[in-house]
Image (cartoon, rainbow, N blue to C red):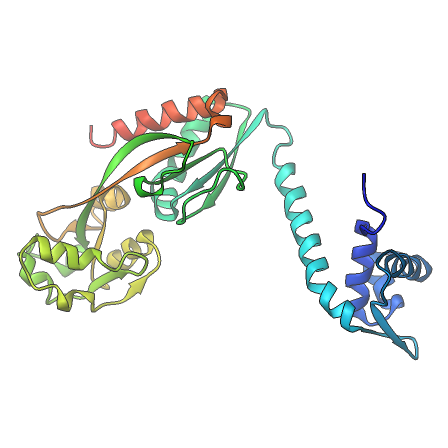
Length: 298
């Protein structure tokens, strides 16, 4: 039951529109209502809250101190309500919607190109895919599952190992015409940096017994798929998960710049909470994903 002081959606819309337009007439025009209806909504809202939200002078409205304090919260509430409504509308015509949080580069480079194959075998199931680098809190987030690195384990959730994270050095063929290079020679080329994991190139050179201090020079990018695109464009050598570069390596847009790999000790992991464990669509996605991963290098 809504409390007496809790505004209605119509009252919030009238308030925010009046704050933007500066008059009830302008707000009425924006909302497709009569001026008297907007005026009543504002009067009712101020009565509910017990404060004057506007200062009135010569038919103009300006926000009071209370109005200024309330405006940002009111706009945020309406924005979140709109987002919630449009999100639920995704269920229309679907038996279920899989809401998943996915590592950005894994999602763009590997998962999304394959989702059509899963959809063809699972009619009636839709997708709501969000990019997430940070760990998912299934208690507060609306996700049914997540694909993240193993370091992002979630208490009380189920975890399925998918694939170890092996890094490979890649470059456009024109940059390494003679094929893979000795590790020391890589330092003479631009080294593309992944800004959220800046220790990867130093780890690579330390594993080869090479001083890594020069390894942090190079253009920086937020995500691995951006590093892959930059390497394809000839901007330098990228150090990326093999699964992210697999398609470009297979079709010849990239070549391995070194014969070595770097094992990070991390793995791609499917994570899902107890509430998802018994859902048939989650089980089908889990089994399909496991089979797809198993066939990558087959």
